[in-house]
Image (tube, rainbow, N blue to C red; front, side):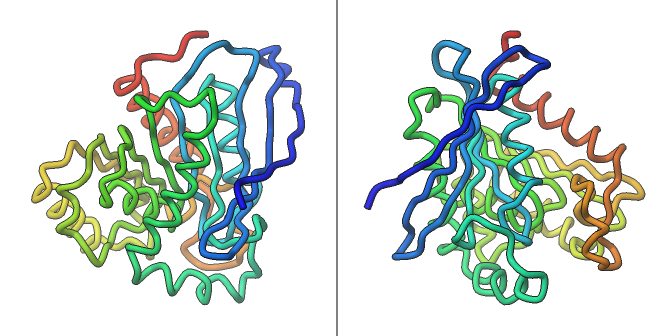
Length: 259
């Protein structure tokens, strides 16, 4: 069965635009996944397309807000669903759901590619200007999509896991890579950062790594502390600065967005 969707129209009062928000259901190996598309259809023509990969807690307000924020800037964005069902998972189930993906880059890439296919099927998507971004394991997913050779021109990870079972696949990365990491993130220690640097060098990748002093894991999510887990905490300066660095990369890669 092909993708199906339900849509709403949200008025963006800042830009005076009607934002098209659509939940799209799609199948991956018999499991229904439900992602959310965001696009300003008051704008004419195609525009850069951004795949958004959610945090390890599942698809929820954080990734959806990111997609809608990007759409407000003129991009088309699709927040994929990598667990299925299109909703956050219970906290005590998170690692059980993540575990099989963390050690299986092939499966991770397959799920990311399915989300990318939904995004690129939209008439507004410019196939020559494509980005994949992600948060926490979603950042790992965006990186694995690129390692798998997907035609993605910019890849951005926020407090993203950097390790992979197939570092040799970095040679397949076609676009520019930016990862934004907190120095106090216990999930991404210094050795993992060093290994990632070696991987990027060996693959001759166009890459950047920004380190944010004082920032812990999930520093972009205002609700991060609700998990009650040490080392997971919102950090507004790093959230703001890393977003700006992503937009700078998009401007460099795709050209500035017309206002």
